[in-house]
Length: 316
Image 1 (cartoon, helix red, strand yellow):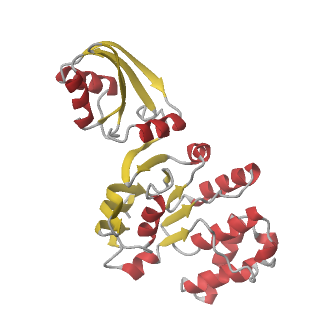
Image 2 (tube, rainbow, N blue to C red; image 1 turned 180 degrees about the vertical axis):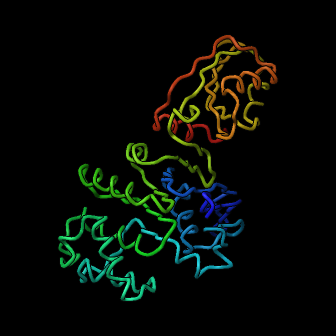
Image 3 (cartoon, rainbow, N blue to C red; image 1 turned 90 degrees about the vertical axis):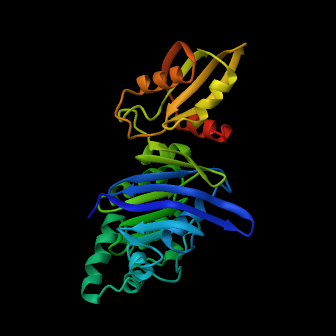
């Protein structure tokens, strides 16, 4: 099986005359936990529902394990686990009954169902609650049960929409470890408004803004300084500064004219495939755009800073 388990190519979606997703492309790898961020109305839930096969894209292609979600809908959906924000559960069932029900929908034979259910009970620390009615569980354990149900079966893509909603800090911490334990044989994508949680849990960050994928990179500074920005003082014409917005491989996060034709720029690398020294890449691009460099400093960014700058620079 290819390490690239999920592929999204040029996906767009509109409701009536409102464009919700605009030419979205990325891929997800096996064992990778990806965080999906964006303001309310950015298109996060719509994108997750398209990945889950609940909604159809107007254009573009979604492949799960090499299969088109349109052309092989039934086979693909067998490989997907999806948990919506409201975590639907059959509250009159016990935990054991619920997991057995989900496994039966996944077409598990009874001879194999017991083993799979017991694995889920152990993985999510639900063994001592297997005979408890779901309505009597605490919020944290209800969420564990919901995620266990979403993961039931031989899935390779687990989609979680706001899984930490309504949980206290201890429950969030426990849930974080559970999600990490799930990652081995699948790709996980998580939508959340809790930036700190995404920062702690995810290997990679995607930021949507008004239906456009504005940020897509790994979060670990040790892997090529993807979380670092260059603060650069340059001299040059405003038109040359604006030309940087059109350059492939960099993001002009902000520009401010300190005095006539003297600018402070914040620039980061958008393309993780660059093998060159990133400082050298930026330097070359600035010179090619007739900008003279006076100072160049590398500064680390928090996820909150990246998110806010992405929202502020909608044309970047």
